[in-house]
Length: 140
Image 1: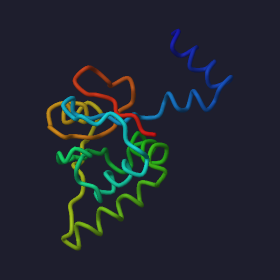
Image 2: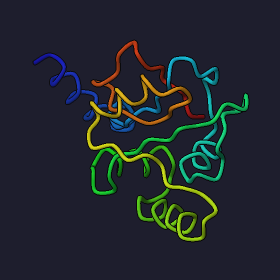
Image 3: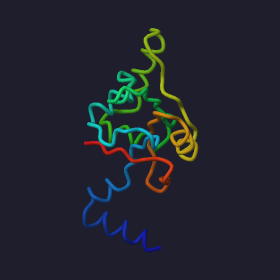
């Protein structure tokens, strides 16, 4: 009850702060050494153009389906692109044989499990799904 009231007050007083709190966050496997990424680097990783972390470890990207509202919010708010733009980039790479699409998961619970158990994994979750099995990566 308190959380709902607090969220409503935040939305009324500071809409941008309340919206930022609701945005899905970038999460990675706990052994990933990177803790900050730029928006451009994050976008390149999710577009499958950058396939390694800055330390050289392979990135294993996980995403929800294009029609999932959490996927839409993450892509628009954190990457500043639309879901169909990412899908077009993935399709081009797959059909040309130059790359592959990210691993698709069906729920945030599955996303949490995959990120927690896949070395080098990267994905996104709403804050309510976070636990100590994954680390949050900040996007600057």
